[in-house]
Image 1 (cartoon, rainbow, N blue to C red):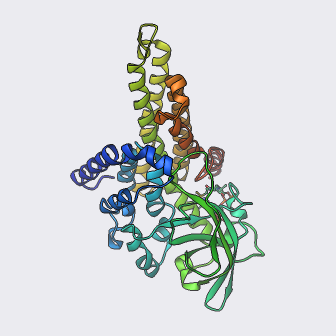
Image 2 (image 1 turned 120 degrees about the vertical axis):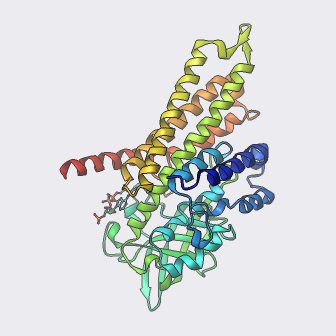
Image 3 (image 1 turned 60 degrees about the vertical axis):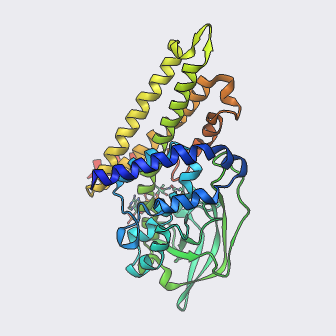
Length: 384
Ligand code: COS
């Protein structure tokens, strides 16, 4: 749903200009230094990019899902690390509060997240619990008006930058499965919370992940999201439904950028006396990529509109994540192929993008988990 086309166009125009004029020229610097320059972070704050998906009453722009995916198509036309910095405040790092938080909890944290003053992070994955998220072992044991949290979270995006964490932990250690899991907001400076060393990743330099370790970390009971135990797994799943749509839209935007780079290279590069874009085998790769990007774009917009209309889009979000991220991987591969030897060296952005986009098929639920969610939902529906 688009609420006001004119206002949205203004936002999309300014984001597109920001990407073209500021972010694209800084891509190599971010990759070399593994850091987003503070001047660009300040500009992101000024543009309101940290609060796009946060309700207006808490200082955000409250974009609908359709508006958000249109934004994501634009911001994704540059290194994914830029998107990652604002991604958790708009997505998994804030949506637990937006969806299931109490008014008091929202008031306390969301305005500062919307302004970009603080970064939020989402701590679900553990060394022993990745795809099988419901088997997580971090515990939160009630002790007076606190919970004592113990456990380790792994690969936590933006953890080194984060001031608050949405942490899923088991409040009933005896009970297996998701119904014993609760979600908490834990502030970075809480005694007993520490961070591991920053992970050395395959790509997305400038975006950081690390372990978050809890050792007898005492969290005020008022930080239990929604004030109820046992709903944390469902909160996480709802957050991921939205996150998966967002990542799908990002996959479309990055694929468009990679295809654009490949097309320009193919028109410029001459072999056998003519631009390689004139050769049909190159054209096949360009055309297949164009068609697949178009298909993914349509899927993402359709699913976003359905979500805005109040439909449960768990199946559609997984279909989008499955198709769009795999499509993005294929486009990356073809774009490297079109660049030939030049695609394998770091003088061209495609070498970096090829590594950067590999993550999309893994995080916020692997392709295989999306297949499982889709098929399960199909069977459930058929059973009535
Ligand atoms: N929205 C709301 N509730 C949901 C839901 C959703 N999208 N998906 C599941 N639930 C509910 C179920 O309805 C069920 O509730 P009841 O116990 O009341 O019936 C409960 O949550 C448990 O669901 P389920 O039985 O499907 O859980 P499983 O452990 O079998 O599997 C999967 C769930 C595999 C889908 C889940 O663990 C998953 O998504 N794993 C991937 C995790 C992930 O994406 N990690 C990325 C790291 S975060 S960047």
